[in-house]
Length: 240
Image (cartoon, rainbow, N blue to C red; front, top):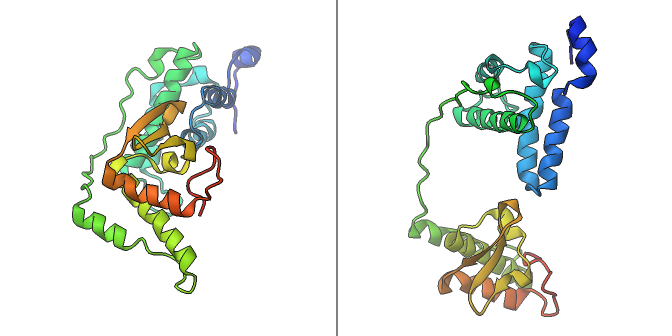
């Protein structure tokens, strides 16, 4: 990372915070507050290229050098760049990167490392909202019909895999929980009497999620017929 320091910069360099040091502190902050690993990874993917670009293109090494013009120029840089597949970044991707950088800058303000002037006039790039159509009953039936899996010559395994897949589809359709939340479920997190799931949400918070009778039935059948009866409450549900 290139550096162009004035005499004053050299005298104060040991008292200033570099972007690299601030980034390390930022990740530590999220780890201490038990931010999900996926969110931390997203911050890494958004911030490390930004910090590298600041140093190489703008000769900005310390956080107090940041100005709103740098944020705008980086958005412009992304708009003219390609992703790892060689395609231009979508407007929604650029907005997500800009949002992650903006959040990081506000954290720097909270830590008294930069002034609010650095981001006061920075507007997130616009992105057209795409409407995602909801699943219909016909779509749901098609998903259930596609749940059969496994070798026909091993009917026991085929039955277990199919039961697992049907449980996944119905729980997602009925409860709306995230994939990571479902994958993290343990036997002790399922109340089969009340038809409740105890789900660990983002930020480490637990929440009770109710499921209808029809939505819960495939999960109940999967646990009853597939999960070993001697499994402890801490055993993962998706064991197949």
